[in-house]
Amino acid sequence: MLHVLYLVHDVSDPAVRRRITMLRAGGAQVTLAGFRRTANPIADIEGLWPIDLGATRDGRFGQRLAAVAKAALSIGSKLGGAPRPDLIIARNLEMLALARRARSAFVASVPIVYECLDIHRLVLRNDVLGKALRATERFLARDVKLLVTSSPAFIANYFKPFGQVSAPIELVENKYFEAAAIVPGDPEAEESPLGPPWRIGWFGALRCRRSLELLADFSRRMEGRFEIVLRGRPALSEFPDFHGFVESEPWLSFRGPYRNPEDMAAIYNDVHFSWAIDFFEAGQNSEWLLPNRLYEGCRFGAVPISMGNTETGRFLKQQDIGVLLPQASPEALEAALGKTEEHRFARLKGRVLARNPRTWSYDRSDCRALVERLRSLTAVPGSFAAEALA
Image (cartoon, helix red, strand yellow):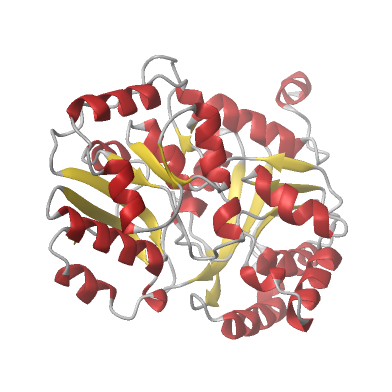
């Protein structure tokens, strides 16, 4: 069995849980180590007790850099009781900096995989800091065996032009994970509630102040014909008063965090549209990413809303689904959605449901393929070889 040491920047990130689930479903054993954004250590992630590397703060680059330097001194002792892994996956640049230190703790040549699912705005700067960070990334990634990323635009706009990583690239999209095999024609999406009011769901990592203000303005213009439902984890560092703002808006509601995948069908079947727009790093990461909410919403029949000039917008154009905005304004939203009625919404949703569910989801066969790809980087025999040797 392939044994993976997974180094992560935030052990409580729902995407970390999803990757662990995929690795284990594919037949890998996982040891988890990483930083946390909570006051106290996390006790359990999918049955794993994470090796705690300390606390970091969202949006505090200097503090996170100091935490990485501190962890570099202690990671050898913290991994002392862990079995030697066959492979190390480093999620994000800061964990790539620790991967080599972690490898030295095992006194063995363990392959390293670099998993990069966002391109931080700091590495795109043209000043001394940006150039230094890119040079650091190239140095740390000089002998990684594989780069895992989630959007073709990350490759086309960053990794290839800047020459950051020479390793082969594996595209692993932010798809929803299905525990059972995916059967085409069986999307498991229930009937949406009757409208109006029409509901737009903005779920996941809520970090875009511009989206919040735009949706609030639009809902006020519509005077109750549209409601905005927010769920997930708001980045309070990005909002002066998130909860106060939402409470002051008559047609906005925040319904707290949710469990992924347990709650996904229920929360998306409760809305009509899914907000798949992010201006947090406009012109850069926000235009290049293919977000989790794109796949999750479509998986359960919510009609996606995106900007037409982004990677998400281009993807939706290829699929011939969704609502694409020419500009980010309440007026553009009103022009695109204001006259929505039941027949039009039924057509929009029907186009989403008509797509092969494998467009939106990974199942266990995809997980096994991912683990086999990782196994090919190591000396660990494949499943058939292992059976022959047993």
